[in-house]
Structure formats: C-alpha cells, structure tokens
Length: 136
Picture 1 (cartoon, rainbow, N blue to C red):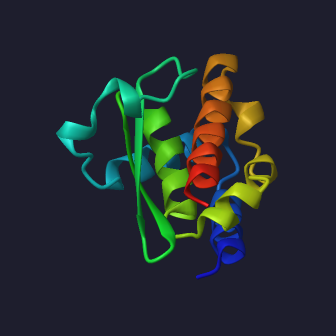
Picture 2: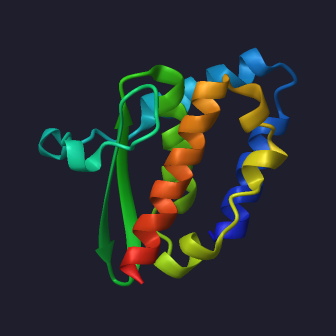
C-alpha cells in the first residue's frame, strides 16, 4: 500500500463515524493493537518532548525504509501515535520527511483534541519528520 493509499484508508475509516466519541473509541482500539514496545527503549532519549503524557518512539532503518515502534502511558495518545506509526512505518525517510501530514486535518483530529493533546500531536509529527530527515 502506498503512503497516499494508507492516508486515504485512515480518512475513510474516520468518515464511518459521525460522533467524535466514536472516533476516540476507534483511536483507543488502534492503541490496543500497537505492537509491544521494548522495555529497553523506554528511555529519556526516546521520549517525545512536548507531550503532556509520556510517549516513546524509536525507529530502525532496514532496506532503505524506517520502521517505528511507539508507546504511550495515556490511552488516546497511544491511539494517536499508533495511527501515525501505522501510516508511516515502512516508508522511506524521504516520503516521511516530505509529507505534510495533512490527512490529519482531513479527519479533524487536531481541532478535536484538547490544546495540550494537539500540541503533543505536533510534537509527534515533528519527531517523526526529524527522525526521517536524519535517516536520509
């Protein structure tokens, strides 16, 4: 699946729900499906700065692509990082670094989060883009 197809799939999945309460439930479900995060990677180095809750993100470059692992101690935040990992893991660093992440605006995520959580989302995006830029 291409990056564009992955983003369109998220937009389609979010459009199935009319209420934001249902969309939050969907995010929580994504968080529950997140691959277990390695204990040894729960370090200060992998903690995303700017998030109210604790969010860890690590990556590995294999065959020219970045693969992310992530976790959070807050259920909705864990769902948000799971959404990002699902869309961007397995992409080339160039694809991630050049993407505008605008599909998140299309699903209305930022404006339906509390200000602190929306700030955390921005920090997650910036961290993923920085990781990608450093891997180019």
